Amino acid sequence: MSAQPEPCMTNLKEAVFLLIGTYNKYASVEGCKKTLSKNEFKTLIQTEMPELLEKSTCEVGINKLFTDLDQNGDNVVDFQEFVSAVADLACCYHELCPNE
Ligand SMILES: [Ca+2]
Image (cartoon, rainbow, N blue to C red; front, side, top):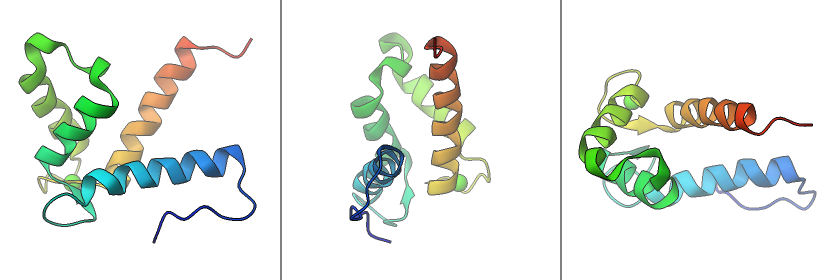
């Protein structure tokens, strides 16, 4: 599936396509283009969400995060595993930024 914008783009659809496009951008760098290797995952986190990791424990943090996300233990993070983590993250941010 290509992440091409649709004619009737809403904010939510745009967010979904952005999520897909961001995943695909990093997943397509090496090996299987549909999954994130540990290297691709590391680049994604360091580029898109550097605040998730303390600099002093960066490598340890990346490994732990990768292991946590790789739910089926096949040593790659597929899109479903990635989206599941993003959903958890969205819940955290939602708690931090209540709709008042
Ligand atoms: Ca996996």
